[in-house]
Length: 156
Image 1: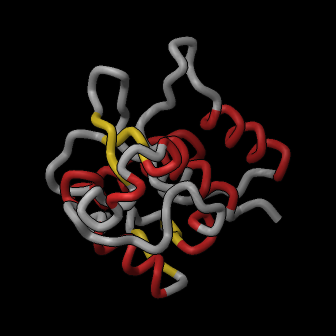
Image 2: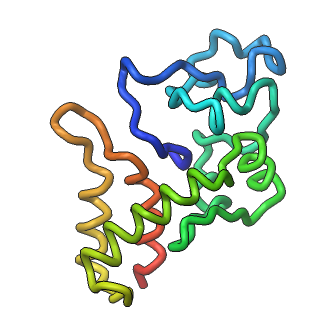
């Protein structure tokens, strides 16, 4: 799923309708239209309100149409990805700062200071697999899928 950012748990999240109940009443009880979302009012589910998105986090295209950069910025490759980012408020300074700090902490500080050292494909794949593996309590660390997507861009 391309959207996951802040860490959530069964007690610190809410059920969010991908297509809002106001815009798509016929999908109100459809489990394929419901995902867990963080409680933030500044982005994601609460921010979306009745906004309509045509690209969803459950679509495989989401992975290629939305790009995360090393500087924490999020970009789009299609108009529907631009809509997705806008409707969900994914370009906030706070989210960009969190993404940038995570990249700095996990890539730059761990791998080589200020200069990014590109690792070989095998090591990158191991690092990505580790980032995407849930902990014993079945949770992923905050922003881990985003960092995995950034690292996958370095695999040749």
